[in-house]
Length: 472
Image (cartoon, rainbow, N blue to C red; front, side):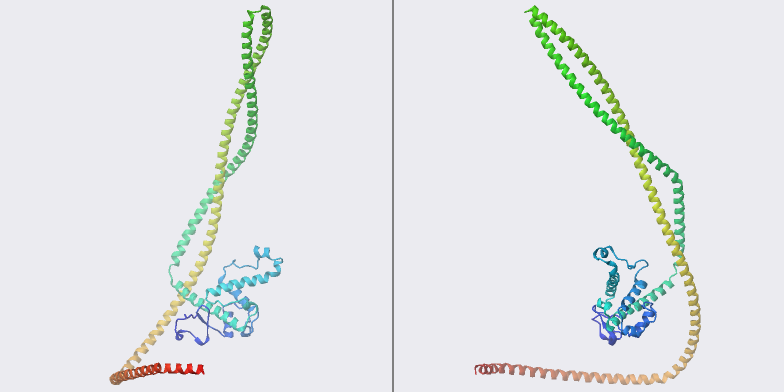
């Protein structure tokens, strides 16, 4: 995955003649159709098994979507992240016949995903025409960028694999995971035991809650009936109070009339006798009204007592209803706690299953790493033995060459002395050439100044000639 900034020199570019500049200022090498077909098959992203260079040289519309789709399935998307060809609610609302546009929507989604990915690796020239009307040059550019990324990813993966294989803390990680799993299993067993122990209590609470709800409904009905009775008693009380007030008024009125009759008694006995008879009859009526008022007062007293008793009953019923509401609230909180504990148990069972899968995966990796380590140790021992043999042969050969190099060293020293002499002569020649160059440069400056003065004197003459020419 060769990259080059625009500020670098051309000598640092890998294969500059075959490189392709991208819009972002980076470079990647263009590959031949045969190399592209070979790499696509090797990375298992070819749209069909017998992919050849001819398919790249004369591309079909399904070539790029097939390659990019397999690339996203194998290298980018996680399992279960794909679209699966399902249309979203937005498409179903907009399109009249969405099933007729399913393939176009799938291709457009793949294009958007491909554009985002290629822009992330600094290739920003992908268009929808590359999917519908591909040309050989554009297909080679896109696939070259994709294959260069795959090669770069493969190199980085190999580098990370060597780093992972050299790590030695997987045993500790394995022990930590086993301890964590044992702890979680113990917690799950404790939760299951607590759930089993609390299950009869929860059932009893549920039955109590249902019974209390029924009682609340009955109490509510009784409360409504008592409120209606209290309203009727209040109306009766007001009516009795009104009648008592009317009787008091009539009694006061009769007393006034009695005083008037007494004053008239002295003046006319006959009239007084008639008035007395009338008064007697009025007094009899008054006594009857007093009896009626007394009976009404007694009835009022009895109704007041009944009302007070009804109010006491209402207060007791209200307190019982409040107790029932509190018991209902407590039962609801207990039910919520039971649900949360069940949800927590389900989450912990899922985490335990994931930990078990990780343990199996780590055991497989440990076994594989141990086998690789054994092979590497054998290879290292073999390489050390071979290198020891080569080292012995090289040491003997080096001794022989050292003996032959002594006369050569003398010749080299003589040549170095001669070269230093030549370097001093070259330095002196360079100094004289520099002085000569400075003299020539001074003469050139003088000539330039003379030319400038000559041009300054000639310019007015040329201007006068042009004026004369325009006038003629």
